[in-house]
Amino acid sequence: MRYLTIISLFLMFSCSPENSHVANGNEKTRVTLQTDWYPQPEHAGFYTAELDLLFQANDLEVSIRPGANIRNIPQMVATGRIEFGIGTSDNVFAAISRGAPLIALFPYFQRDPQCIMVHESSDVFSLEDLDGRVLMINPGVAYVQYLGKKLGVNPQLVPLDYSLARFIADPEFAQQCFLTSEPYYLKEQGIDVRLLPLANSGFNPYRIAYTSQDFYENNREVVRAFTAASLEGWRTYMESNGTAVHAYLATLNPQQTSAFTSFTKQAMEQYQLISGTRDKGESLGKFDRQRLSLHLQHLSELQLLDRELDIENVVAWELQDVAQAYAK
Image 1 (tube, rainbow, N blue to C red):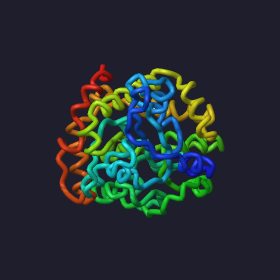
Image 2: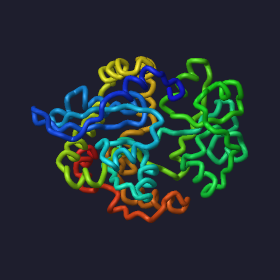
Image 3: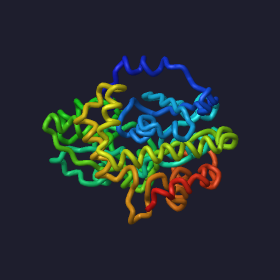
């Protein structure tokens, strides 16, 4: 749960040394993947690739470095301090527009798990119903701009503080959350919620893995191997009950109880976050050109890009043949 971070985890992972891409004595190429939160099921495909030795089978030694609220991950990747990062496509494309030499590799989530939650008893049934309502949300997320400028929905914004106290106390309160997380803790306290996925607004980013243009151009086989192993890790996780990797995550992050990780996996399956909807042509690891073009158009209209981007230059399209194997 995102507001229950613990100092020991920060110290454990922030003090670990950075790796550089070198081949060790076993001819494995050593690289680092920087995540955007502590170990959790939302990153389970990467940890499955580590646990099941899928990275090693692809001649890689991947160090997964967790972190929370690290705002400069794109910069760290762009400057070569780390080889791979993960994040939302809107943030990565905005960084590219500001001059960061990055390239998107593959989506590990077809849909963003961010949503707005209200009490089950609330008369808010859609995002449009939030107009004029009090909404606790991170005011910097692109969704806020989209709701106001594109949909004409202008809530009374309260900066997100990651606490559930105000939501619990006020039945009329609306709050940003991850559909894979906060609802679990509220259910434990007997509070039922209604979830409004922000991706349903029409602003629909992917959650992606990315690297620097330089690393991509000079290490294409390494990037392809990382992509193949990661996607196989996600496929394995999707097709399993997740017990093994959930137990592994609990050793890295004690907050990941078996009940919580089971809830998170079920939520990812219910909302089809990983592989999307087959009827829409979505599948694990697949980018859709039309959807990405609309995504860039929205970012431009919202004035979130410093310059226009060419869709052909911001995505490693040649890696889509790896994802194609999971489209069946």
